[in-house]
Length: 205
Image 1 (cartoon, rainbow, N blue to C red):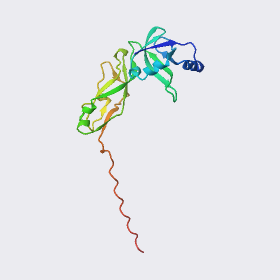
Image 2 (image 1 turned 60 degrees about the vertical axis):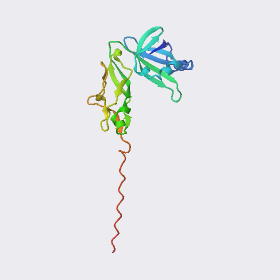
Image 3 (image 1 turned 180 degrees about the vertical axis):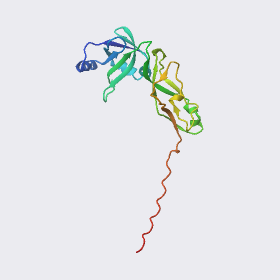
Image 4 (image 1 turned 30 degrees about the vertical axis):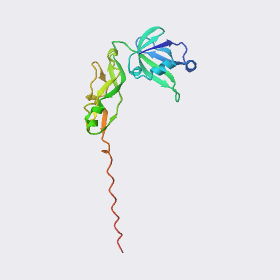
């Protein structure tokens, strides 16, 4: 995806407010061998770009003062209650350096699984994105999780999905998070508590 940015010379909260009043978003691009560069971007095209999933998990082509830069979106700040972007950060990427980024999970074929077709189970997506490490050229826009073999009582763990070549999940030692669970309607309902036994009559003196 491609977007246009310009360098900005003025910095500070006052300068940022002036940019926002002019329909621009202050930001910064950092990384690589170049010093961090303050930038500004037109708000409305950026706002619509941020509504596209791939803008958050793809290598982006930024045209900065007419020169190409390859970047990753790293942070977005929003107005407290208005649909306005107040600041944005990008990181430069190099083709030969690995990056770490979160990408969305796309779950497919759950309606074909035994858990749904045979058992009437309700599929729950516990995790909807995963952090991965790869070279920029290997970065997928999403990771597909095929649930066609999903069964009741067998939750899907991260170790059970296939990653594209050159892509690896970022995990701490011993981690294997659950991605998907199945609930059978009514199966988890608690049994009603037994009625309390009547109290023994008090002994007569």
